Each structure stands twice: as structure tokens, then as C-alpha cells.
Image 1 (cartoon, one colour):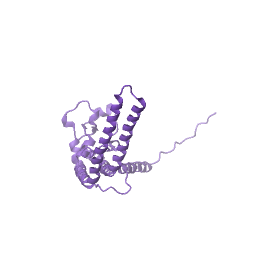
Image 2 (cartoon, helix red, strand yellow):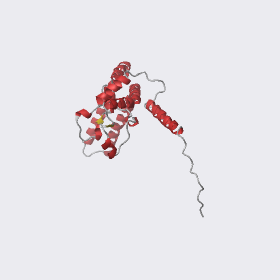
Image 3 (cartoon, one colour):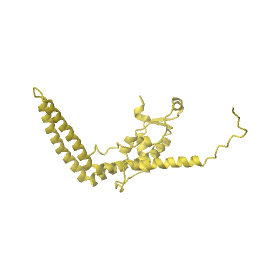
Image 4 (spheres, one colour):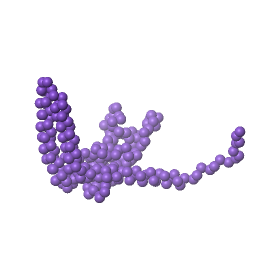
Length: 229
């Protein structure tokens, strides 16, 4: 279950912390740091507490998924053994071999579908938790950057070499714990994964359009238009 409860779906691309910067802009940055947003989310008190709550609330589904998964894997292993036996025959019966391979593939796909259906409520609850953290992550990152006097933050994967003191992931965690100490694991009716982030993005777009609409219109050029022939 610990492998399931990982912040794997956080929409990092929606966090408008800073746009891609050119080399001159990076060179002008006074303070540069790195932070792993996914790690910060997974370490936050909100996510850790929610993970424990999900394990308790959905224990029946989690246990059923694990138990059924073991049964299905045993059935798949039987089909794999049959395929191996068929592949060792001399001469090989290609039709039988292909049928055995297809049986393994079909069983695996069916198993994934069945296990996915069993674990769907758990996955949705995790997605809801991640979604709530995602919509506040930008705020936490900006607060951490201010506290650490950083004006450029990059993903650790984009860095070739660095000193440990430039990593402010822990600072982001601290800000998350302050800004969002807890989240709800009670999934609202009709909720879809990523819905909160989409709504937040739409709000930001609407605000940007509204701000543009309040700017004074550019005056029309004066003078006589040139004539053409």
C-alpha cells in the first residue's frame, strides 16, 4: 500500500512559479535553488495524514485488491508455464504457441482491469488529496523562495551539479505544513481526478483576462490615411 500512496499525479506543470528562463535571465538571478515538488508534497503532513486515513477508510478495498491480485498472479503463472512448455516442444506448434501467448496477454489485461475496478475508490481518494495539495503548492513554493531569498527555482533533474545547501525542498515542505496542515479524504460526489487544478487554472485565466480588460485601450492613430493606387 505504501507504493500506492505516492504523490505520482501532482500536476507540476500547472504550478506557475516561474517560466522557462533564457540563459541571460538565469545569469542575472541573485539566488538560485532547487526543489523537488513531488517529494515535498509526499513529505507534507497533509499527505502523510491523509495516507493513513485512506488506509483505514478503504482497508476492505485495499485488502481485497491485494488478495485478488495474488490469486490472479497465480493464475497468470499457470498460463505462463503452459506457454513455456509449448515453446520447448520440438517441432513447435506455432498456432498453439500463439494461442498460449495470447492467453497470457488476455489474462494480464483482464487482471489489470479487475484490480483497477477494485482499487478505483482508493485511487480517486488519493487523486483528491493530491489535487488539494496541488492547488496550494504554488503558494508554498513562493513562500519558501521568499524565506530563502531565492528568485530562481529549478527542478533537480535539470541540474548537473550542485551543493546540498541549494536544495530548498524541506523549506517547501515547511510552508506546505503551514499553509495546508490537513486535507480532506472524503471525495465529493461527481469529483474527477485533477478537477481542482483545472478549476484553479480556469480562475487564473479568467482573472488574467479580466485584468487585461481593465487596461486602457490603445488610442487609435491620428492623421490622414495614405492613399493607394
